[in-house]
Image (cartoon, rainbow, N blue to C red; front, side):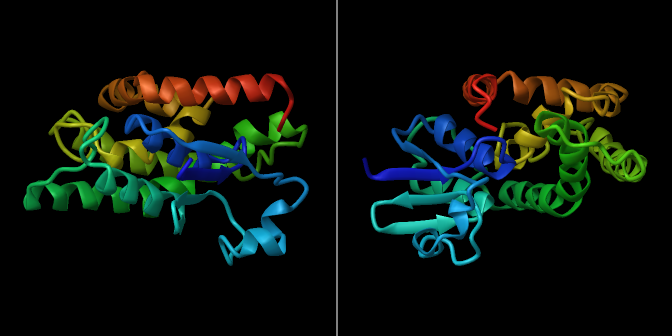
Length: 220
């Protein structure tokens, strides 16, 4: 099979890439990386990503790392397949790109720390650092206030269609909706409706089902 995705269960970047592949209805091979065993730091894996991080995507002889770069490649290289996740008109594309940047620079730093403290630490049997949670809840609150205003103007962050600007949020939104941080989303009606919409997409339901099945097997 030409398309391969190397990743780990529990990894938001891995599931971000998986969501794009499934939205595009592509055939691919998912290759689990033993993160606990530090397989991602092995000499063999470092040939795929010199930073020793996941996921890594291969399409024939092409190797791409960084989950957002993977989703952009998939959306553009396979534009004729599955869901169209890119606004092609230049002005609309510019708006989409703005909100993709907002996700990576504003939403990700706050939400990722809350995912780690509130969702992943309990799964791994680690103790949540209650001292830092309020700080990152406040940071996420500020981002979601902006989102609430934006979502009064269009159905999705990047415009009137589902795009990568929305898809990139999916893993962290999914995790946080299983924690007390869900109240931050529900307190904002437009944000709440948007989150419910993107989480109910068939492609993400498949990804979440995969995550649940592997979690039940105590793979992570």
